[in-house]
Image (spheres, one colour):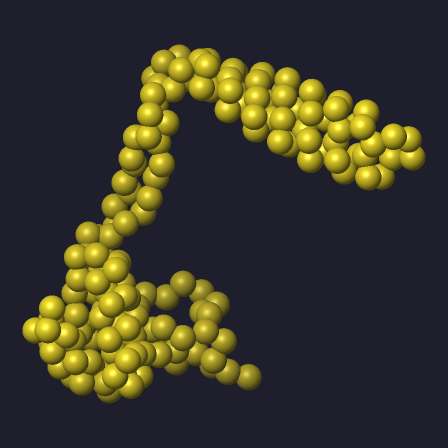
Length: 170
């Protein structure tokens, strides 16, 4: 049986997973504008035999970023609904065709047609319920304003020195 230690950074416990969410702990040894830079710093530590199991990357100042990908029109909405419904109907039709005693083609075609109709209807209802308030498509990401690299206190000073030399080389 393993017990969690007060320090829960990285794979700090034997299972590599904490049962409950815990705030990160440790001393800051570096701060970076992008996640890629923070990864590069930890990779540098790993390449130089630093105990990276003592390291945690923490995204600070979280933001939800929504990037608009295009304008929604009835044609795009209905096309996407039909395609989505057709895929689901095809899947159901294939399953029914596999387990039916008769021919497999009729359940597949039926599933495809019914799925397409339901996909169209569902997309039309959802889009019309918006009443023009959201006529665009977008993707959403959770990002951080900066990424701090923390280390267990027993090796923080060494880690900070190693990351300082990395910054000088860049």
